[in-house]
Image (tube, rainbow, N blue to C red; front, side):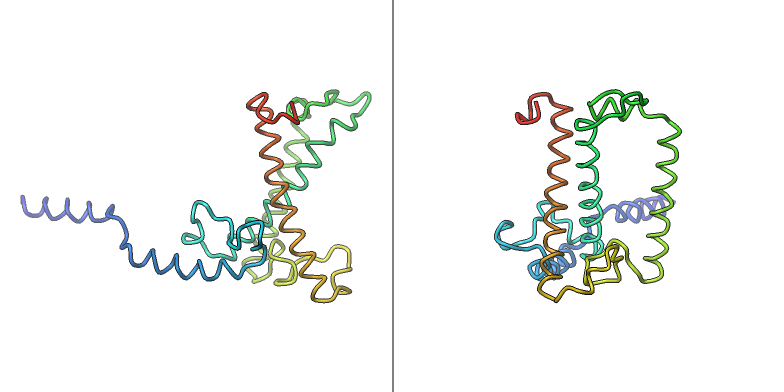
Amino acid sequence: MKIAVLLSAVAGASAFAPASQSTRVSSSALNAADLSSMRGVGPETGGKVFDPLDLAQYAPLDFLRKAELSNGRSAMLATVGWSFPTLWTFPDGPVDTTDPIEAFFKADPQWWAQFIIFCATIEGIKYRAEMDGKSYTGEIGKEAAIDWTGNWAKLDDAQKEDMAIKELKNGRLAMIGMAGYFASVLVPGSVPALS
């Protein structure tokens, strides 16, 4: 009986043992080679992709790039949404403040419910498309992304590459900008230009 308990304890403990280091290193080395050839690697990133947490070894690169593009696009919209109340408000509307955080809490809860349902619907459509092998969040020019303006087909390959790089870099800048906006609210005086 004691041996059975001892063996089950050893077996249970082995489930929490760290993975072998050799597998992790080879995966990281493989992804490091892939990272250097990705779009968006340039002199501003030191010729390497910006991955300080070394996340590329834990997730597929195409997933990480789609996440970066999706979050960058959301951050670009959020930057406009953050700045909008300071430029224009509804004179007799429900939101009468120019502070984005106060505007967030003064909005009607029904509006937020509709917004959440709308976002969930869009995410469901994106998920279904991913399961069918399509992508609405992939890199422009590499996958079947939506061309809202119809101008993408008119561009040559150099212009398409230039537009894709611009989208990626503007998304990165918008994510940094939104972090600055949040820091200015959460830590007063942390962003002198916004204080």
